[in-house]
Length: 413
Image (tube, rainbow, N blue to C red; front, side):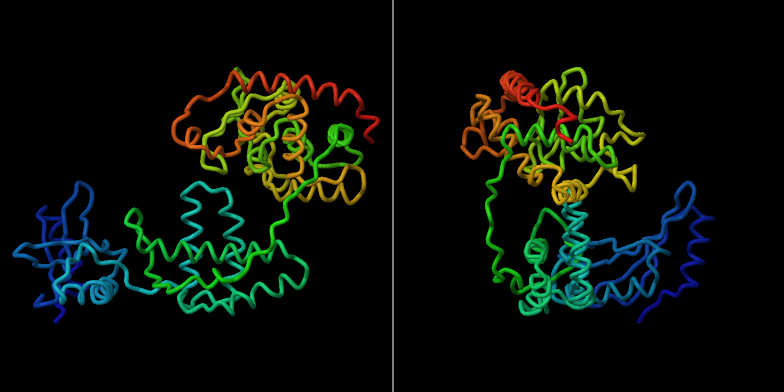
């Protein structure tokens, strides 16, 4: 029978405070099911009161902390003991391997997956969180994750597809599939501690077909490149300064939209004229020298008080989002003032025109931080190729100046 009461805990805390001697309070008789105990220790400025599970195993006393009083109440401590430890002790198993036995809900699964992305430094976690929150509201946030059927996922995706948002429909499918894949692995991953036990029998999104991938082929020729660049230099309508400058830097350097959008003072080495990312999309560090045109552009910008070169128009404490840059380009394309191109087309244009400028495919891949799949590059070669990158960018800079000399700011508008 329980023997601890809230009043007894308060009295014990006062005694330990006065005597400066450790005390232990015991809840339950401990026969066959172990015990819930509270250990009170005197500290210089306070008394700590920790809830522990105690077990006798192989003639040794084993303890495991489950919480601290008063953050964890007596009622909560008893609930956790009965739920997660009593049966384990009865079966003769060690309390050291006990985990939270509550089954995970849809909200638990999605929140855990987003937290894993965030911990891994994936910039996509915010967009993923936003998408999964909407899906959770539709499926039912408090339903058990293991109860979701493939048909329910299909019914979430179908209306999105039918209104013509095919890419978004595929994103929703991929969000759910990735979250369930994480959930199935996380509770068995000895390297991490999963917040819940999901017991998911299968991934409900794994059998849903993906949207066929359409490989882009669009790239800007030299005249289109110059027309777009000079329009960005002096747009014919008021625009937030971050937008055209960021797009220009993408054109000049060929880097990923997300990485340029988030350019921070910590990443620009003004002495070496290098942009240096400690981590990028492929989880690899990347440093790239920039052509003199890009140096002039970067040095013409005064980073804001938070260190961003391209701050958001709505919140200066954050960088401009890559989605905002996509929307900006789309609006100008629809107006017909710039050549038709997506931001990915600009990266493809860099790859193509640098080839025309005489730069080798291998060096172009290194400049754009495209993963090299051969064993030598992946496992052995640790040279940074900076001298070769500088030489390639110097050649690209000379080519750029000839291309841009064909038009001027006034001609572009």
